[in-house]
Length: 73
Image (cartoon, rainbow, N blue to C red; front, side, top):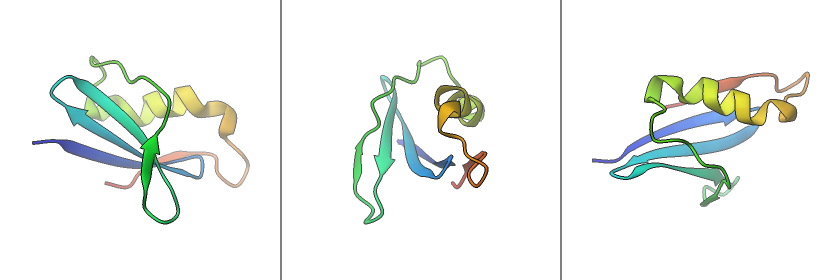
């Protein structure tokens, strides 16, 4: 069974899905469509480490109004 973790990453909705071969990352548009996020999430990253990993990768996108990565599901 695939595990789908959703985050608000500095204002961008992101889905990270655990697959048998590792992680797949997607950007979620305002209409709910998913497209490739364009990053590689190493397979050794645990689900508990995803929020911190995404914060490290995308920290340049932080703004005063969107200064955090929040797990949604």
